[in-house]
Amino acid sequence: MDRKPNFPDAESIKSTNLAHHWHPFTDTASLGMEDLRLISQAKGSHIWDSEGNRILDGMAGLWCVNVGYGRDELADTAAAQMRELPYYNTFFKSTHAPVAALSEKLASLTPGDLNRIFFNTSGSDSNDTVLRIARTYWASRGQPEKTVIIARKNAYHGSTMAGVSLGGMGAMHGQGGPLIPDIVHIDQPYWYDEGGDTDPEEFGLQRARALEAEIDRIGVDKIAAFIAEPIQGAGGVIIPPDSYWPEVMRICRERDILFCADEVICGFGRLGEWFGSIHYDLQPDMISMAKGLSSAYLPIGAVAFSEARAQEMFDAAGEFFHGYTYSGHPACCAVALKNIEIIEREGLIDRTRDHTAPLFAEKMKALGDHPIVGEVRTRGLLAAIELVPEKPSRKRFDNYGEVGTVCRDFCFSNGLVMRAVRDSMVASPPLVITDEEIDELVEKAWKSLDQTWAKVK
Ligand SMILES: *Cc1c(COP(=O)(O)O)cnc(C)c1O
Image 1 (spheres, protein in one colour):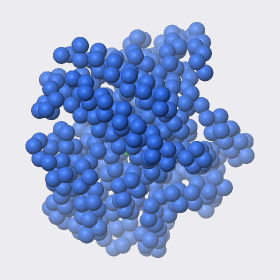
Image 2 (cartoon, helix red, strand yellow; image 1 turned 45 degrees about the horizontal axis):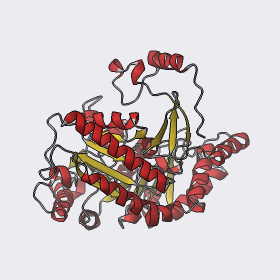
Image 3 (tube, helix red, strand yellow; image 1 turned 30 degrees about the vertical axis):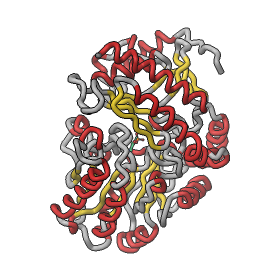
Image 4 (spheres, protein in one colour; image 1 turned 60 degrees about the horizontal axis):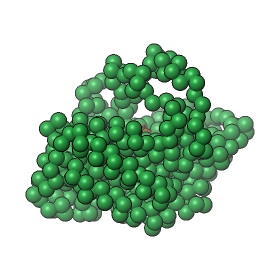
């Protein structure tokens, strides 16, 4: 599909958009016609814009199009389900075949006894559900004072009030407050920025023990849960030192607080396993998921909860007064199931773990030789490239945050989508990315780094 999309009315679409569409995460006041990119088509790992530019999508949309674009099978599944039963709710004892089948499938894929599945429509409202389950669970066990959720600075858990409150993004906290009470944030395991001269593994232990210190400071009788992404995505692909997770798990188990893994990015093959929890050998009590669950062909999220704990809650709390009109939407469930079937049939988990991720790691590491690059880190099909003026000191550019944006814009003009998180470039390509496309990504990234360096040095 190399044909140039025919978009004679691109200008009028853009001006209509500018007049009425309110973009998420956008400075609308400064948005102009020339800034807008009109995306017209997509296939595999590439997208096309209305000018006919073919762009390698190094972000899989927003970390979500795991099986790649242009899957007729998913479109056909949605159409067939919509003809059969476009909608019925799952409240008040009703059900339908796709939601039952997807629940069973997710129970089989999640680790441990996370066999009870609650459906949501996104990652954000999955984390709302997490918050409500965690507090309701402890109340049902006769400990209603266990309400505090510990999260981390620079975490991303979504954009609803619960998502923002759980997340650790300062800019988001600054708008629309006050935030939900009884949510606290501990330091993140971001060695490159915050580790100083400390050995990374020692630093990982220190940041894990910040959880222990916070639990003890507040009192374990007040703590409901700890929520964390196996690898922080939107925060800048923060890959914790290997010492971090085992220590965190020890602390959660010893203190008997719930551990919720926010797997909205790390799930569905991103780290070469069905879940990041499997990759890191975590034992979560809850997993929130979305994005790769349907490869974003339709919006759907879910929370998997420990069956044993769910039974305790059901027995004591009676009805859970929670649910969304679209919880377990039949078309979304059917598409998610088909998406999982594609991942299984094409062996995308094994391929990512055994082939694509090691190749991606090796090729991306070469970018570390570029003079503007301080560190390249990858895990599975996640990567971050730290941009710095001089390597060994890990010192940042004076105009911290602007250089990443410069680089991102060069990437776009070179036909590559990468995202800038402050002065880190991050990548999260579709699992179906080919070996040649990995080379294309690295070549375009190198060229963009050259242009960025020439502009800012
Ligand atoms: C994207 C994301 C969310 C929010 O998901 P939405 O579907 O955008 O609401 C939550 N947690 C993590 C880790 C995410 O990356």
